[in-house]
Amino acid sequence: MQTINVTDVIRKNSTFISMINRDSGQDVKKCYQCGKCSAGCPLAPFMDVLPNQVIRKVQLGMRDEVLNCESIWLCAYCSTCSVRCPRNIELAEVMDSLRILAQRDNIRPKGRAKKVSIFNKGFLRSLKKYGRLHEFTTMLGFNIKSGKPFNNAETGLFMLTNGKLKLSVSSPRGMDEIGRIFEKTEELGEKRP
Image (cartoon, rainbow, N blue to C red; front, side, top):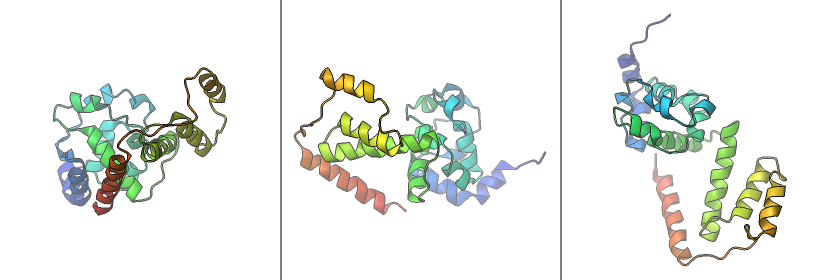
């Protein structure tokens, strides 16, 4: 078994680490791999790489491996990991930064992560277009893009006939402000290196 000097590896991968530290506002070098984040994560059983392993891969400069893992997409941003961390690392912020970097690098999520990405985009599209979540179009779009157009059709029909699902949506007041929020967010995203 090969011995790895983590300090040397971190020093060699300082560019990637610095980028994640800057984008997330966290210092991933502080993590000493206690595993409390992974032990408390409600989604850890579904992840291909545990939260503490994601941090270690960042520390080791394993950029491609960490950006292609499902875990960064499956993170629910519940912050259980952050609360449990004895080093006060907001791991949810790190995961979010990794998702953004993966999108910037045009890395397409695979497996379950693909469905999360499809849902996230549909959710934001609904907010941008209607100013609120329009369940019908969001779920219809999700089902079509995930290759199962009739998934939950029976439930949807039941909800529709019982007045729990609306085909039309009324826009809230302040649609101009919502539009400006999206414009500003997109502008800031383009300015990020």
